Image: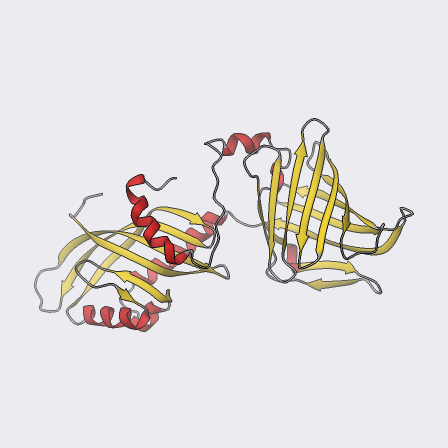
Length: 317
């Protein structure tokens, strides 16, 4: 879903600081994302992946060993044609990226990759009707005239096995290899939505201390409430929240109306409905607010970086 044009000036101001240390690559598929994916011979790889059981087997010279690599994370997406796949590999070093381009005339899969400071790979190969990929790749940082054969073989639609075997100039295996099985992660947007819902539940829970609620904010949070100065930083926000609690409490419920993911930044438009209970025992007052949150994603966890809200008439969407 797209954020409405009327929100863009505010959104740009909101994201300026959030993106000061981040770079986002945003492109348009002109409404053809699903159509392109259906046509893409590499479509099975689109998604997010991690190592099954964190297990990785390798031989770089000497004995074969199976090691544990936690927190491996690969994001694979088509770009803006039906013949491309771009993968970003994150987690323990060395991190890197892979680009595959399929030639629909020759049926060749072309490969470019880069890992760490030196390990650049160039090669080409083929793809079967079932989606298995075989590539012959040469790498900087490995002996000249050696190459590797990569086999990507599908086990199920959510699991594939990859093995890289090194060969010498006589086309004989050198004994060096590495391999692992990759499994698909749950839908990223749904995962982020669940995290946001958990954060909003903290804000709705009056039984929690202000200190506990502050844990869901970044240290440099910017909090903008109606008829108030901007609270910048946790210390200012702490004073604001504690001052509010002196006069009463709000029994409320946050709702997510829409959200967009921009790399490590998530923008969420929402609504809060509730009743304010003054401590002077006057009648509770119903309220509705509309809000805009900016969450920052750090190590796959979210915190509130910025929030702005104002009042709406009760029962008004």
